Image (cartoon, rainbow, N blue to C red; front, side):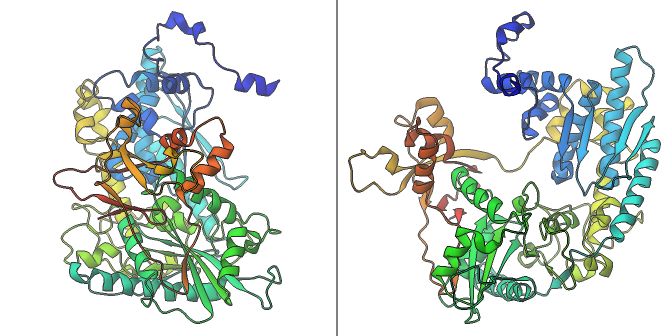
Amino acid sequence: MLNEIVDSDIDYQDYEALNLDTVIASSKARDLIFAPIVTCTVDHIIQASECKRGGKYIAPMLRLLSSDLILDEPDDFDQADLPALSRLVHLAGLFGTRVLLSSATLTPDLVTGLFEAYMEGRKLFNQSQNKPTPKVVCAWYDEQPKAMLSDQCSDVNDFQDVHKQFCEKRASYLSQQPIRRQAEILPFSANYTKDKASQFYGSLAQTLVDASIGLHDKHRELSDNKLQTDKDVRASIGLIRVANINNINNIAMQLFKADGITVPDDTVLHVACYHAKQLLLLRNALENKLDRILDRSDNKVSIFDHSEIKQAIANNPAKNHIFMVLATPVAEVGRDHDYDWAIVEPSSIRSIIQLAGRVWRHRPDKVANEPNILLLQYNIRYFKHPNGKRPIFTHPGFETTLFKSPSYDLNELMTAEQLAQVDARPRIKAAHGKTVETLSDLEHQVMRHLLNNPKLNYVNAYWDSKATANRAHTHLQQISPFRAGTPQDDWLLIPRMVNDDEETDAPTTGFDAYYAEDVFEKGLVKSTIHNKTIQPLNFNFEHAQIKPWLSTSLNDVLQDLKVAQPDKSLRSLAITYSSVSLDSIKANNSRGWAFHEFFGFVRE
């Protein structure tokens, strides 16, 4: 009976009196407004405060009027998106909505800035209800059973005092915990020039392989006769986090060259590439496998019990097997994965802390007696722009032209205490000095200047009583738009096999590229093919001891999906799921894309 109530369709005729005909014409808009609980990216709700023209604000605004707002990992946003987020939180206060922020790495200035935005909105809500100036009920929680704090805050000073009290208590708690993540800086130095890029990436790849072998030796698991082999096999699964997709593919391609990388005779590496520039269908297939393999919560299940591990070991007999996931920051948040070790290209203290949370995530009894995380000495961008004239710790990262890092050598940017025990303390407690000495200082200064600035700026001007006109126009939305990065185009890659006659023995190979909007408007048959913009990438995996891992054929994934959804054709499934968002092709950015099922999409 409960399932019937929860899953029952909504009779929209009950809401005819609201005259929402055009607003709820879209099924997505209906779901956004009427579903009891909506789980979505913030893009679906941000139009409530960011819409510059048209009626796209109506559905998210109606939802915000009638729901609580839970923001998961709000500090994961680029700082360029935080002004828009603060406008959304202000609107939530204006509507009398309750807001919950969830993250382990919220900085004091970020939380204070969002509270101020909410408070100023809540004052207007109370005025509209003929109520006195509000005291906002605030509460702080973590995993400690008796750590909860609550208070009624009438202004920013009240809030800051209680927040500081909570953070000091939490920092004390973290300092008393066993050391589970211990970091060490991985030395690396090389010269980069465009004409010798392959040598640079080859040197970097060798450094990463050597470091991976060292970490594997310290943190591997033994097969203990779980495999049908004469000798025990040692295996570990590690994460190598690289800030940008282009660098991942360049490193991966160097790994697979025949004689490019030196590996000990008794060792085989198995490499997977995990990033956003991949077809939705193939990325989902990879994530499903990683979710299963990296669920280490059941100590009765070994990594040797998974077919993907067994098969890789069986195909490449050796004493040591290192399973390596090359990933962008998509691996840092939102994935419940447990790795044995990690290597990190530094971008920010936040990313280091978040990624550290993926090491031994499901195994709370393990204690780090030696490093299980290595931090690359420099960000890769530093070697391409060594003169220091442009920001290095950016996209992702917090460095700007206004707030520069004092150094790019991580030896000078992290303290011995931060390396000895990697946890959230550098983020939740801010140093209030005026100089930037460490990477965490840089992040706190940027957040303070942006969201907790005593002077009027383009963030607080949205709700400040001295600048009320900003609510009546979209100037602030124009100068600080949400997701203002490189324009994106949605593409569909349709395998030609979906057009094959069922009686044909030899299916057609290859794919055709289409603009997604074109297909949705005209249908696949009448849409223009753009095979010059996206072309196949031909690559040979030549290295005898470094093998691609968890790679999947697009055709095979479509066939598996057809089994799960037998009422849909292969063509329909491909149109729905074989999609990707790529940087727009413009006159000043005219290079096309190459596609490979393992590497994803690579700039030509």
